[in-house]
Length: 278
Image 1 (spheres, rainbow, N blue to C red):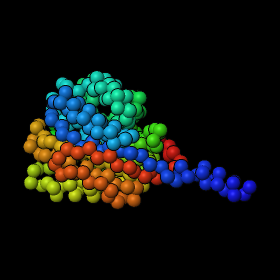
Image 2 (image 1 turned 120 degrees about the vertical axis):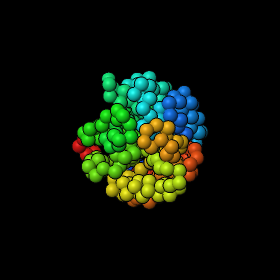
Image 3 (image 1 turned 30 degrees about the vertical axis):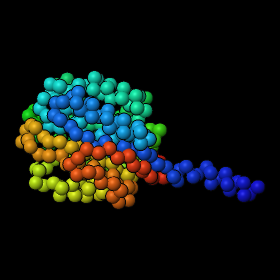
Image 4 (image 1 turned 135 degrees about the vertical axis):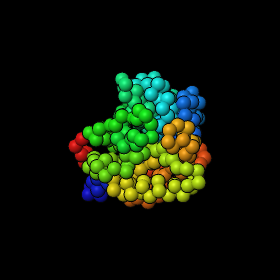
């Protein structure tokens, strides 16, 4: 009888000790303003993610219209709206949770946003970037609010979103730490002059490692491939080299340098922790 009780107790606690999720890191090419072409590339990546039995597909920053593309003031749609609805339809078609960076129009304001939708297409979370690098576009992206930095409970764990340069800021990092996420998905548009690659990738790797160690959860930093065509940084290259780091800050996967790649990885999530206040 005692042995049976012990076995039942071990069975009850083992799922909490071994929680994992399969994430497809979708490092795709983005061409500024090419909405239809970019959506086609998103769908090709989702096909690969589904075939690799991923549960989440993680995409880069501003992947439909291009980061710091001034035409986004005219072309961007609200969230919810036409572009996010298409992402929701793709989530249903391929049976995948999707995180992705989308430019968002809200009245006269343009936001650099990211969304998380579940495999039924339900919008679970929207994050508006705070650290918008206002000097790169006129008029610039509007800033999100620190109160908008959060995590969401999902069937796969407690998932958080921030965007690229948000990971530079101490107050944002500190807030995420208090929210105890199980997994952070970070869309990046990590750009540098051509002659600074592949060295610039090391800076992204260093940053993501530091944040994962602080947040004590895996971090998927998905970067673009392509080139900026607008503003003061016109001609800078997105170098890929997306980064997957475990909850101790150790590098697990580094994707291709300046090339497209979809890589599906299994990530061990931290043991279940009490949810922090939002």
